[in-house]
Image (tube, rainbow, N blue to C red):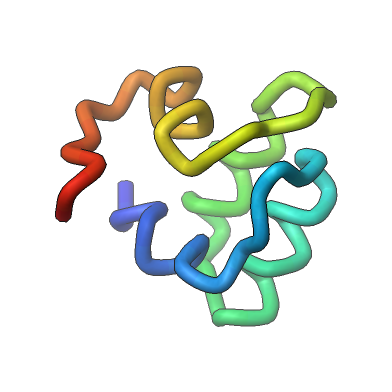
Length: 63
């Protein structure tokens, strides 16, 4: 899968899943990224680390 982080750099947290999808699409995310984000639960995400935890990605919050 493409690195989801590059498509979520301008997201203001906390936000809902739909906002993640809108931002990723606006930045030109491919179907693989949109598909993975679309499988996330409809809930409020406090930060990008919360998104990556649910996607099963290991994220260094300092990168």
